[in-house]
Image (tube, rainbow, N blue to C red):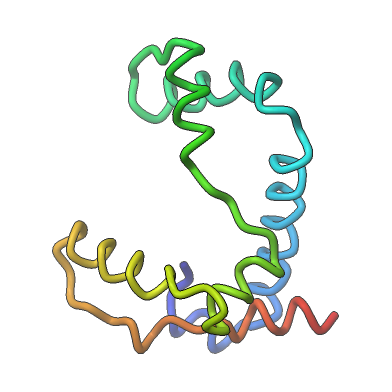
Length: 114
């Protein structure tokens, strides 16, 4: 997510951030899950202050999808109809106004065009 005004003024920064983000996604997808357990447990501890046993970290990683650039573009294109449902669930969870009209694939497409 990006601040709409900032993203409009600095699309090249948003695209550069996405390029870095997707390098991380590719690394996550290419790394065997067993090798991610310790790092995920450390992230969880830093984020929540709680210990996460390895079996729970494995369970969470197995159920936490991450999408490549192509995968995210597919979500936006309508080939995969999960995106709108997920976004509605997030807005309900966050208790905020449903602003699905603000969701765009503009920056993903800019990165894909590079």
